[in-house]
Each structure stands twice: as structure tokens, then as C-alpha cells.
Amino acid sequence: MPSMKGKIMHIQMQCCGIILMMVLLFFYTRQKRISLNTERAFLRAFCLNLFCIILDIASIIVIYQRERLPGWVVDFVCKSYLVTLVGVALCSLLYICVDIYVRKEDYRKAVRRYELITLGDAVLVYMLPIYYQFDEDGTTFLVTYGPSNLVAFWVAIAFLVANFFLMKKEKNKINPRRREAVLTWMVVWVSAAMLQYCYNRILVLGFACSIGMAVLYLKLENPETNLDRQSGMFNHGALVQYVRQLYSEGAEFSVLAVIFERSFRRNMTRGQLEAMKMEIVEYLLTIQDVFIFKNAEDEVLLVFRDAVRAEEETRSLLSRFDEGWGEDRRFYIRPYWISIPDANVISNVEDMLYLIRDIRQDSRDFSDDSFFHVDRQKAEEMYRKKRTEQLLLEAMEKDWVEVFYQPIYSTKEHRFTSAEALVRIRDEEGNIVPPGAFIEVAEQNGMILKLGEMVFEKVCRFVKLNNIRQYGLHYIEINLSVVQCSYEQLAEDYISIMERYDIPSEFINLEITESASMEEKRILLNNMKSLMDYGVKFSLDDFGTGQSNLNYIVDMPVNIVKFDRDMINAYFENGKAKYVMDAAMHMVHGMNLEIVSEGIETKEQYETMEELGISYIQGYYFSKPLSEPQFLEFISGSC
Image: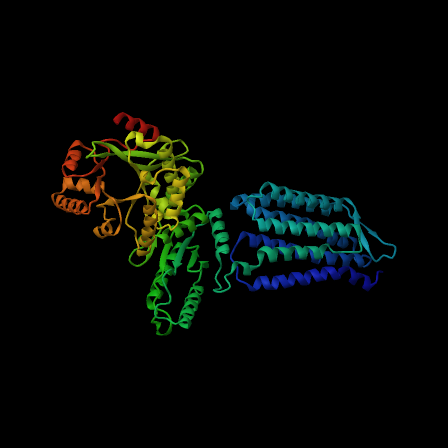
């Protein structure tokens, strides 16, 4: 009979593995978790690895006690250990499949397929014989031959090979950190198996299983990585994982975003501020049947699986915030609320977060009580905006941006003396997309800066290549949006482009609109000064739309004022509007500024504007906006 010392020597590594697993389990169960598929896959792998180590120890014990035990008991325990080894290889494969098969049904099919293979392997392992080989002193042993051993070995190898294959084939679907962690786990496990095979006295396979679990825990499955340490809520990463899983499962759920964008510091000391923040967090964490995520420093998202529960808690939250916070509840917070009762009006978590950011950017979306309700119509608007953004990006990358020119007629010279440059883009089919479909989107997301620079450069190239003087043109007008006007490097960038194309600055006239703030106005004036010093002139666009007022004309060093189409139409349709426009024209002429009337479409309108002393006429009466070749042909024919 082998000595007790020899038996202890063989199981000490396995015991260390069990201790490590128990430590991991202790910390894992102490943290709050969200119900993720990866968590369930990890727990399945953890339990099977723990069972594998226990059976490893049990197999050693029964082999040492083989003379006292029935042979079938020894065989059963040892074969069970072989089956769990195959199960460990299976778990590594299923852990990767969580990322590959995002749809719940697809994942279940994959699990059933691989479990059937494992079940068939287990039946064969238990049916086929297994043999043991011992050293001369009888203290060490090897399961070195036998059909049972071979079946388990080759199925485990097949699972490992399948795992490597899937990780390579589906690498774009798999979380890079998960792929790295599973590879590390597999390398440790295979290395330990090879070491144990070559040196049968070193039984490290069970301990290697626990090391693999530690790798997964530390890199991916530590619940603390999903928590915001400051608030105790789940963090942005956990939000993305959880909501993505809900969408993949087709689950019904509701979302409430609470946005603390407004200042907390009004009439509060720093201590009061921190105490109130903690009070709000503690209150939110008491809400039942909801997962709460800190998505940003000033944004909290509540995800409900029950729409009725979501509606009830939303009313309770609104009521609670109306009661005040702090001592005697004398401090009030007025957050923005974004409610998505049916989150399935949106397709995925990325679109949901995009929609929330989009709503945040425009406070006009909120009602008087700072509450915004997202329905299917709002979601469809968001998707149209996203498609437009994608079209804009593609158009700028593939140079589908074009400049059309609308001629401007001089009533003094009785010919066309200038033109307005208007941006157009084409879609994949080559169709022109009207500016009303993309300009506002470009302004909202900042793409207008790049788009505007592309237009300016194309105009400079057009002026350089075509010598516009020969057509009797004095200058080309180019629109600047409010976003461009508030860009501090505008003048520097535009002067650089004009110098690159070596065009006289007198050929450029920039159209500006009223800025929204004093800071934007300051930046605009600085840009205007630099450009005017270089020789560029300016027009004030959209006069009469409510965007440009009389004070703005006084403040801005412009040469031309453009009367908006709506103002011109009102002149012909509304008797009172005539007095307003007559007064405006008298004021503008008194400041020695020229006037352009936009939107002139009929001969009557043209003749009336000419009689009123309007300097320039622009509109469909003469021509619609034309592409470069069409514009040159039109101007050539009118010279």
C-alpha cells in the first residue's frame, strides 16, 4: 500500500487550486452584479473547473485505495475526471461563443450542439475500458493508455482547436480582452497538461484550471470592474454590456435618463454639495427592480425590465426631486429627464446613447418641466440624422461635395456681376441632396467646419482656374454658418487657402448671420478684422428672418445686406410689411450699404425691387443654382 506521505504529495497542488478558487468565489459573491450572459458562462466554467479539481483529488485517493475499493468505483471516479476535463475545454469554447452568437437563440443552438458532442464523449468514456500504470514503488501512477483515455483526449483537443478557429474567424465579434484572457487560460491549461504528461510525478493540471479561472476573473469577470467606485452604481461599460444583451435577446425594457447638467453649486457650500450628491445617490440605489448606471459624470440611466414599474418609478422620482434635498430639504435640483418607455423603438445600445446625447445638445427639445418623452417618431428622426451624418462623412471622404453657383444681377450695371456659392452633396446613386437635408445636421455635430472649408477651397480653385474677371464677375459670395463664425482659426485657415491658390482677396465675399452669444460675436469680429485687413468683404445674410436685427447691422462691418426671401414675399402679400421694408431699405441706404434681394421669382417682383433702388437681384427669375459647367455656360451667354 503506498504511503500517506506519497498521497499528500500528489494532492497538494490540487488543494492549492481549490483554495485559490474559494478565494475567488468569496470576492465574486460579495459584489453586486448585473445579469450578463458572460457572467453565467463564467460561473458555469468556474463550477466545472472546481468540480474537475475535486475529481482530480478524488481520483488520486481512489487509486491509492484501489485495493480496498471495488474496481468499478475506481474506474467511475477516474472516468468522471476525464469527462470534466473535456467539460473544461467545452467551457472555454462556450465562453467565446457568448460574443460570437449575440442572439439568444443562436447561442442556445451552439450550446446544444457542443453539449451533445460532450454527452456522446461521456457515454464512450464510461463504456470504454481504462488502464493504470504504476512506478515500481507503487507511489505514482499514470493514466497512459486505454480507449477511454484516448476518446477524452481527442475530444478535448477538438474543442481547443475549434476554440482557436473561432477566435481567428470571428475575431471582429469577440471582445479583444476576452480573446486575450481565454487564450491565456488555454495556454496555461495545455502547458500544464503537457508538463503532467511528460513528468507524471508533477500533477499540476488541476492547479492550472484554477489559474485559468483567476485570469478570467482578473481580466474580465471581477464585478468591481462594472462598478463606479465613487457612487456604487454600475458604470458605462456595464451599461453597454447589459443593454446590448437585452437588445440581442429581444427583451422588452424601459430607460430613464437623469441628466444633472445644471449647476449644483448655487447657494451651496462644497460640503453641502457633496452631502446632497450622496443623498441623491443613496436614494437612487434604494429603488427596486431596476439596474442603475452612471453613464457620465452628470448622467444616470435607470433600466427597467417592466414598463409599468418604469412609469411608477418615474412619477416617484419627479415627485421626490420636487421635495428638495439637504437639510430641511431647502436645496432643489432640476435635472433633465429623458424617458424611453419602449426601448425597442431603437435598434441597439449605441443608437440609444447617440439619441440621448443628441437630445442633450438641444435644450429646446425639453418641455417646461425639463422632461422629454422618446417615442417612435423621435427615434425615426434620430435615424434620419444618423444616416445624414454617414452620408456627409462619406461625401467628404469620397469628394462627393460640389459647389453650385446662383447668379446675382446688378440693377445698376444691368448684368450679372457676382454669384452665391451653394454647397451640394451627392448620394451613392449620384443624386443631388438638397442642403436643407444636411446643413443643420452638419452644424449640430461640427462637420460644418470641414464642409465649409471644402466649399471655400473649391470656390478658390474655381476662381483661379476660370479667371472670373473675363465673365464680368466682381466676386463670389460664400456662406458662413454660426458655427464657422465662432471658430477662432477661421481667418487663419481661409487666408492660407487663398494664398495657396494665389487669388486676389477682392474676389471673395463672405456671408455671415447673427451669432448666438457675445463670445461668438467677439470671435466673429476678430475673424472679420483679420480677413478684412487681407481684403475680404462681408455681407449680412438672412435679414428679415428674425436672425438679423438692426443692432447687428450697426455693429458688423459689412458692405452688403441681403433681404431674405420671406421678407420679399411679405412685401408683396402684406400691406404692413411694405412699411417695414421701406424703413429697412431707407436705413440700409443711409448707411451706404448695398442691398441684395433674394428669392425673386417673377418679373413683377424684379421690376418692383429695381424701382425701390435695390442694388442686386438674386432668384429663380434669372436662374436657379447651377453646377460649375452650367454656370460658366450661363454667364458666357449673358456677357
